[in-house]
Image (cartoon, rainbow, N blue to C red; front, side):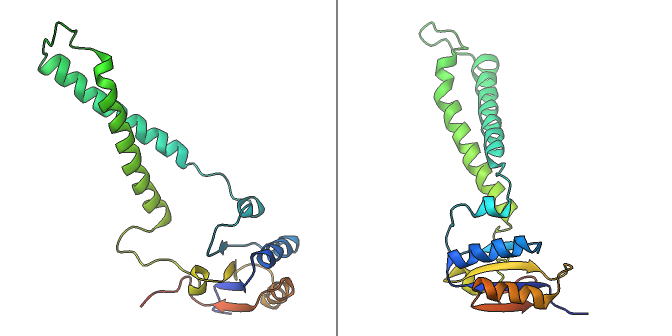
Length: 178
């Protein structure tokens, strides 16, 4: 049994990589992931990646921040320490709007940073997950799980036909920096 975990097709041109994705999908070879040094328009649709749900998380963090500060201000200004300022009602909602907006933005920003770091495993102290170092510089990498049913030689030939400049068999999941 082979110790290969991933087969990596390295391309020097994004068009060749997109052609490689099409050829692999036409031959029913499942693609694990694609790594590129720059964003490529339309690659999510080609790979069948669903739309992100981060917008829902941002909305929930905003609601949490807005309701938290509104509750704090309401308790402080109405129940705990009501003040008569110029004869106004202690529960004057227009006075609460600026700080409620600011805390909504603050909770959303911090919550999204935490969510992004958690979802991408990029939190401090963690070794970055990189299949090939050149994917961060000048190569476009298609990673294929080697445990599939397609023989490795067939995958190698499909990648070479599509224009891969190099085909690597990786025995580790990620390259470490040590």
